[in-house]
Image 1 (cartoon, rainbow, N blue to C red):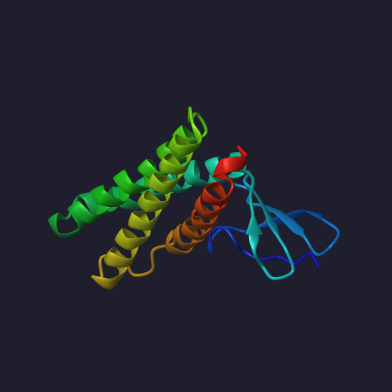
Image 2 (image 1 turned 90 degrees about the vertical axis):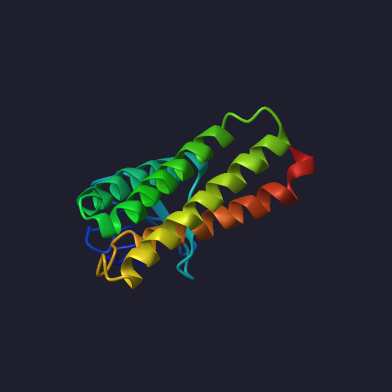
Length: 162
């Protein structure tokens, strides 16, 4: 059940370090130390601390990805927007952890989702305009949007139980 697959970044190897019962698989990306849990259907499950690490790593990697794109005038604005949106997603998810109320928690989590979605848009924009042939962060942005979408849905559903 433990196979070598790159779930986090396609160009970074994943090292499996433990196989859970019931078809769960835990993998570790060596550069980040972020653990991913996959079930038999390939769905990723992360706890809030792991998601915080993934968002912070995504913001850092987006910053590194955007750095060479800041020089040409044609790609400067998109690169700056990518940097702002990716760091905004990480910052708002972090702020959600410090929320003073249920409503504030859902609001901050929703803002983090919007920023992650905006990051995905700017990566697609750079790809579609030919400014970046195959952005390596696009798959990670898609995963983060999916995870945050489910987190917001769960937070809204559990709002009364907090």
